[in-house]
Length: 361
Image (cartoon, rainbow, N blue to C red; front, side):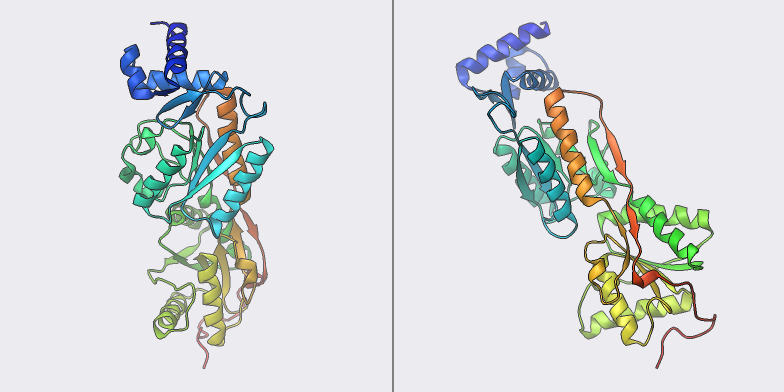
């Protein structure tokens, strides 16, 4: 059956039933579900119907977005606070420029809750979906076919899944965190540091930071110590203080006066404890944090690698909206470079002579 014939039969069926389902259309037309989804996307772009989760409904009589109706897109993220608050604001700003509405779902970094949030957002009838999954790139194989089951256009944010974890390639916009790690190490080298201690929390970002740190260390001839200590982000209890002291002891043993910490909160608490122990920051201990959400608010303002969070949300949303307007096109993988915001915590070169104890009585 030729495409024009399929389109005519789809529109005729839609006029009869008011709503269509992909599985039923595929059986009725004798074609694959992928073919039906492609047909629906083209008819949606032409303003002849509106794609929703699982199928399509009739187009608004007033037309598509920009002609009297409001296009709705979904955004599902692990958190609405901290790092992702700027991503959401960026997406919202871009949606406003297009006259579109954003519907938010928050997974709380829970893969099971994420599935429910995605279904709920799709159930509203969104035309497309922005998503930063609860699972990171290193855990992509746990996604199974979940992404592939979504039958509206999808743009991934801060994730880069592809074959064989998922059956098809997805548009994505992500920060080049490996480049961010290189920025931090390059700044340390500029200040005279050649031994750097690293403390990364168990986050999705750490997967990419570790790659960048190792590559940059090799290129810059820097010695690294990757600490296994789980630093606390806050707390004065004995266990939290002991963890901070253990890491500072590791730095002393390694001979490092430079520390890269992910994230801001962990870096801020480390600086507080170092000062309680009589250390000067940055003269005795230079600290760079990663994320730059609250880094400037630390007791000693933290030099920090700053991912382009707002711009990432903007660009992901624009990519999705343009795809909805123009129809299917080439898959795009966009990588954004972070900046290094230099503040007080990393403003001086190594000042202590080798052999001077890091801890002071």
